[in-house]
Image 1 (cartoon, helix red, strand yellow):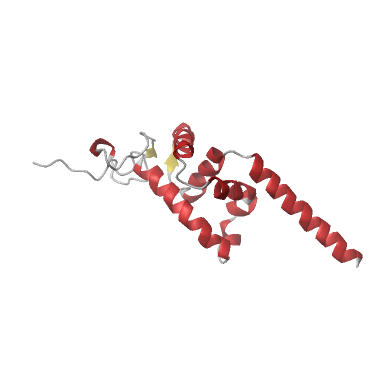
Image 2: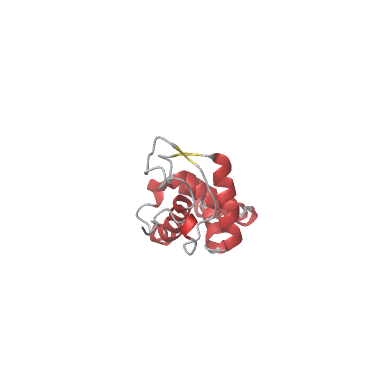
Length: 141
């Protein structure tokens, strides 16, 4: 009985610690964590990642609840192989793909020909309605 009590107390303390970390974090921190973990093969401008995270948090594109939950799972999330085959992984992938694709569209990654050897710099928040910010837009001749 004592072993179960000890195990239950340890799990409750771990859950409380993760919840505390998630509730006290900022949305920008979770967005930056997603970018750094999903695009770890790219060289990115750290200041640009922070500015993009702040701009995206202001737009409220991704749910704040999901971002705080992601911050709470931070140590587990960074070890992505631990979450690879869980139902939580599917919920996280949708938001991750949205964040990373918006970051890449808002940067000079496509303008530089998707060259992974160059440092990716944030240009400004991507607006699909403005042709100057769209890396896929071509002028009519």
